[in-house]
Image (tube, rainbow, N blue to C red):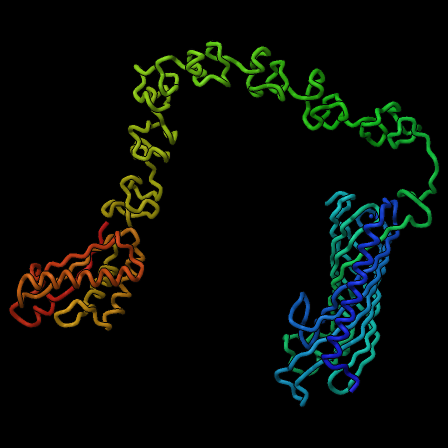
Length: 569
């Protein structure tokens, strides 16, 4: 059989990898040695070499994106010519092996193992769309993504593990993909790209998707394809000795101020060398304040000429960069800050800026311990910084109710709620609401009403709890009822649960009391193990003190031997 076995393929792949390693070293050396100053209007013709992986996608399965499957190396070449900042015209191609091996599940012929190896080559023509086109990214961006589309011709010579043992095909090819140019300079770039080749042939892998075959990846495609992911380098030439978008021959032009604008087009012929200029050779004034950028200390903010282009926001004669209070009009002597209370201490340093005070007391009155501008004898909260409207007491949440009267001092509320909000809108303010985030009823302290059917479910669950005779050991048959109770309790998370243990009147009273407590504790322990918080549970044994029925007959005594549950808030 003409097909190469897997061992040979691995050996062949290792040989390709070693060759690629050599190419990487050589490419890196060339790039490091280059000092030339990567495809643009000046360097229009680009030539690139690349190498990478060829991953099969067809009727037998898929090895794309490093999926499980045999990987093969490939080498490629691409040529590009600059059309505009957005588009290049391209010709590109690559060659290398593509292969795959798999077991088909419902194959009708006797060969369950399918292996093929095809020597492939393709050449395509198309367009590349560049994102560094001046609209999305800058044209001189170091990292420049792109997409490209095209079509061309595909050649394949394949060896397969079943009859016939080989195929040679020529067909059309559609190709498209994306990549990134890492521009090193105007000529050199490193290119990472991934191109999907959809061949117009469905037999070079030895398996036709239109026939009745069991395809492992569920595809019944009319064409086989492969993904070529590569890395390489690109070099841009000054095509045909031309330069610039006009492609005219280089010639010496007269530019007296060396700003890049020829004298006959330059409207500002004496521009200083350090200044950037516009299309007519005049210095740029980005913020339009009359001070050109190369002389403007604040080139992106409109300012004043007297301050070298920097602003004076509060118009107090002190530029913002030197103004200690740039948004409040002050005096030059005080570096732009005011002294509102006239105590000789500017507001930025005055801890009581609206009340005259002493410098040694930070601008506050001498007898103002909390420095809120209210003298201690008039301050109802002399040790805490407060507000004048509350006689020196604070209002931390700013709801108009001082902390001393506010039941929720850190959360804004209303006067009706004593400073607290009603977060769930159920008419019960948060400081009295046991369930402040869930709407409820006043009778349940703001928690949801426990519905009659839920109470019945709880009573039914209680009836299903049984113990070993004379012991506090819960019988296994009780677990479903207890689990039902756990679900109910988790639905009423804020509710507290009273677990009450009861016995009949037979036996010694003290022993009955102890046994009822132990059984209540056993139920509590079960609930704890199943996620009910201890803070919600209270277990109490009542012995024979609270009979539910007549203890003089067996039926009544059976009803009295019980565990009851009560939900409260």
